[in-house]
Amino acid sequence: MLKIMQGLPDSIVGIEGSGKITKNDYIDVLEPILEEALEKEEKVSLLFYLNENYEGYTPGAVFEDTAMGVKYFNVMKRCAVVTDSPLITGAVNLFAPIIPIDFKSFKISELSKAKMWLGETPETDIEFHFDSNDNILTVTPTEALNISDFETLQTLLNQVYKETDIISGVILNTQNFPGWEDLRSMLRHFEFLKDNRYHFEKVAICTDNRFIQKALPTVIKHLEDIDAQIFKYGAIDEARNWLRNVETLDQMRAV
Image: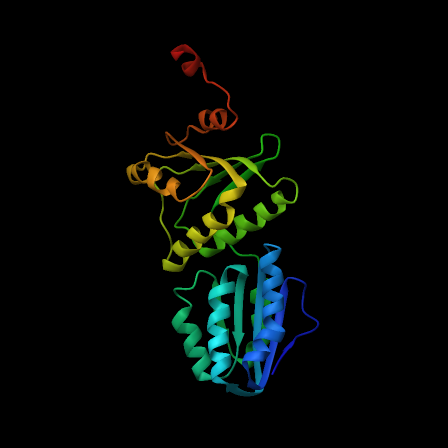
């Protein structure tokens, strides 16, 4: 059976499993929580605790676990699986490197450690600033992008969306795109773009990277209703003027 854990911080959703876990346990207990988060476009940190009385999954539960993982993975910020089952721990370690969320296993004796990990603020090397006056977000990646970068940025955007549903412009300022830390970080990047594409009107990319310059037209085709423009690395003022529909002196001279 599955039941909701009590006494956890608001930022953590806890599910405790014991005995034999069935398909209906997933449908009745876990799915409503994830579905609500999906409808509200919220992210949850999930604690999945299989206690000492855990006896295993029915075949239907195994299928439902996989189906929900595919459907709802993008509403999970982090997921900690607490268990002494070698089979479950092995499955978590197998899929963790390719799932675009922070996914980690802990032993039952590490339950407190798992709670602390879920409540931590992700570390990030990405620099970002939101100008509420012009409604423009500036992002400057300095190291290879990782999952925590996107979670931190998404948290900021969720706060902005409470005030305005549409951001006038986004500036990405990077001399040479630093790439991704691993495969799951790249997948999370694509998921981030998908989740936020309807909130951005314009994107200005300031870079000297030739690959980005050539790839941009292809990428934009998959991001509906977004206008994008390439600028030289560091040309943030010029990019801001374009986002604000302000003509520069050179543009006025060219008319």
